[in-house]
Length: 351
Length: 107
Image 1 (cartoon, one colour):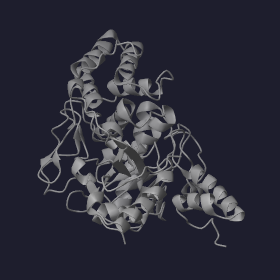
Image 2 (tube, helix red, strand yellow):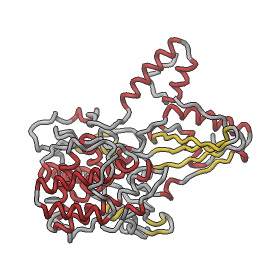
Image 3 (cartoon, helix red, strand yellow):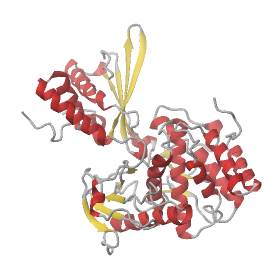
């Protein structure tokens, strides 16, 4: 019979379990159990096979990176092209990914005192040239993946540092809080990735809250698209307005919260609300956003009281508490005001 | 595990590719397949495909900006309208599902 450990889609395996001979059923069930172990569930990151070509985590504060070329296929991780400490490859996507992973690691280590995704030196693996004209970047539970874009709407996804920081932060959020990727907790998950992605960019550029553009994906859209980025944290709903893409649908206030069955309850839409709350708090505090607002948001993310299915208001309450604990009543007031301006009440009791 | 409801000529199947870092409505390219416009053979093949996709349904599809195919079934159950929604992660989607979403046809 056919070796069921070769690549067979799970839906066929389920059919074999239902209709096959005893031996076939046994093999199919064994393979399905293996497939389930590969599936991505929230929690600590899974050490990717590709990490085997890197040294084991050593001294805290030392990044370990490897960037791979998926060569237009959708198989991960692809061919290793640039490992930690190696010279630039000459491929812009590879070198952008390598530099951005390093900048993101530096931000987490130097500003937040976190040693990579799991705070235990997790190796940062990135794959570029994934798929054909692939219009996406993602975190799959063990590594980051970047498409080249189609060249008409999107350019390659490694062009924006905040995109790389955003994907890395998905690993941090999963590892730390495991926020469920749906509805308000999902939108908060997305917002936290935007927050720490944009702070990574501001930290590298040395921009204060006043100087920063507060845009997500400012370098992604091609010149033919009428837009300045994918999302605006300062003014959600204003990033693009284009005949092909439509108008940026992000709300900037709870009264405009979008209830939808799409995108897991609009996680990439409703993230505009907590995004603006962070922006307002950071602007009110002034200076570099990572020095106060960023630390407060990070404290709240790491607070063990944060529920996996948190609401905006429950998270907001934690941020106010941490602002008071780490800084002053003025900081707590700025955070409270930021949330109030977007219609989130940090004092509301959760059901 | 869910089972596929009976989909007769009054059923409508909606497919879209959702999620991702650039989750933009127009890029989901929603496709609507009205069973009233399909032959019995076409309906049967689509139902076989959908039945094969049911075990791939994942409540965590989309996490970390991973894209997924959302399948919505709108159908009549007795005298009432009913619907079923499930999600297939992009990296597990059968080629036939991608083809149906992309071109509205099966091979």
